[in-house]
Length: 178
Image 1 (cartoon, rainbow, N blue to C red):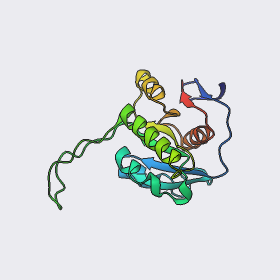
Image 2: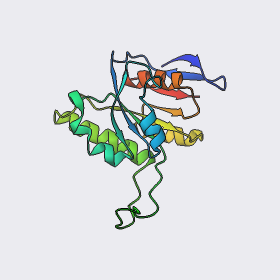
Image 3: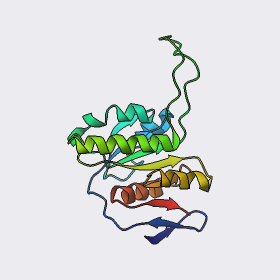
Image 4: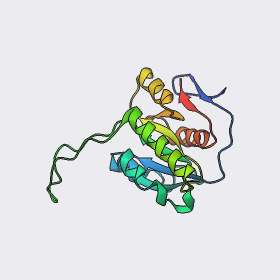
């Protein structure tokens, strides 16, 4: 692990050595449609980042990982907190939706499903999971890393910092702000 660029609070961003692929295929998991639909639009991320899937929660992404173009997803950008729908759909009706898996459970689900699909030949390799969150508590960030996340990026960070962190995770490294 080697320190590199300085974070917004003066802390170093920790990165381990690794080279990101020339084209980074990315899945965005966020319950907020703004983040989910906006990330990957022209100018939001580096041109070598290509969003191959968008999902409102980890279960939704896990269900489509085996159908991705070229069987590739290098990094899953995962919102840590997924807010459950509180009421049934006003148009479709039905029962109250179940709460989505979130936090460390979502990280572990995506890592497990990615490994299973990779072993079955349905994915080229398991994707790294990079947490993209508004959560600031260091203990939560540590829990994410212990659950297997390849890093944690706060949503207040610049898009440049997000892009750098995606590259670090795609190259097999770990990206965190200290």
